[in-house]
Length: 357
Ligand SMILES: [Zn+2]
Image 1 (cartoon, helix red, strand yellow):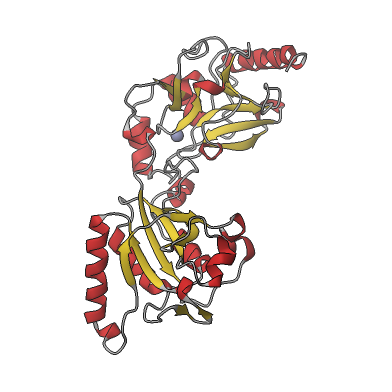
Image 2 (cartoon, rainbow, N blue to C red):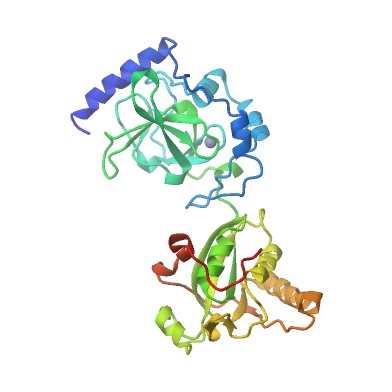
């Protein structure tokens, strides 16, 4: 940062002066409860960050309720893109270990490990807690081109990001203290600042590209990963599995939020994603690695999956056809090679499996 810092500091001091004179950056004043936001919130399927926090936009009613807890200053900064005066924020000098969360919705924004002394008068960080937790928006207010930083989940204004920060990123996330809450390491975090509850399930139903792609699109599924399971060789690799003698099935590991989607619902979707009556094949893909199988991650799943298969076999849908799906306790799961992951999302197309419609 060296020589750039004094100029940046001067610019920021001028900015602080203008803002303190009442020339707030309200040209793009936002109303979190606007009609536009009503459309993005509400019934949207849940989305998750890489660190497994829910990024689903909050419903307007919830935002409205949270906003009631803000002081007038906080409200001005978070909802009207205001900026606090330099060196006045409570977190500028904070050197404690912990995490900084969004003042409005509680999403973790920065870790104390990325905080540095910029001399600007605002809490500064060289990287966010998770790149998916902050959103950068071009801001042309005050006759300058700057990049505004807002919370991905609630769209509150947090501050700006500049390219004069220290290594390894060279970035300086210049935040308002009032936009954040600090939680010291070891303290209990409120539910809104914790990652989503996670559960795991495993399904094999032919080519894993297609099964992975379908599960990835199910609301409440955090992640779906292609791999191999149920064989007798550690880290078998695609070539060996396709040889058909390792005993593995092409399997998808589904990580899901049980509050959003139940295991039962995943079982039901699994049956729409493939033809469970085909034994050791799925369409043109023939071999035991394409068998239909459920690997239960725990005893409860084992009981539920067995009951589900019996129920399906007894139903009218399978009156004349035998369900070939097997169920067994989960065995070690080996992630497939990187080029198999997100195959359809990267390359388009689809396998010869049911569309799930
Ligand atoms: Zn937020």
